[in-house]
Length: 247
Image: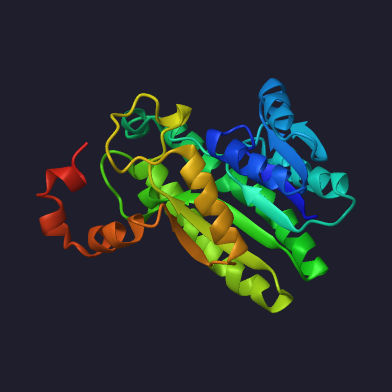
């Protein structure tokens, strides 16, 4: 039985992952913003041992406290930390409103650090465990449709690279999960295409990537070759290809 902390547990993706882990008998501590939604996810986890805690992640002091409380709730032993919270924000507004740009960066990058710093210290002292964090393929290259969100996720990717190398001597795995678009409430207003994945499929792929101790996993897998092309397209050409650089 693993001891698992899940941050952002009420997201559609995280909820599906929690159900999978609960079915295996893992002990779960679920953290999210909405107590009612947390209770609903806990109920879906059947007979597993589940505790919950709520709080606002962008309140950095509260986020750090939630991390420490999660460790205590699992009696001081943590086998897996899964960080799944995030918010696309309003790209158009963020281009002209400093507060919205700062909110997007705070939610998708800084608040994650507030969780990871105490948790990384705990797992380093423990000399075991896994940290898995959802980022996004949007962090691979700046595009007009989501570059504020993408910049925050790109910064998180670099941070996780450094954290992975720091924790490697202690036997701690850090897995970066680069997700493409998923058909969830967060993308409800987005036009869907064949590249959108279902939460159940994404949950399965996340579970596999963590089990295999992957350093970086594109979820679903087909984003790896797609983003290789996107990353290496020369900027003068990139700017002329509307399907890449358009809104």
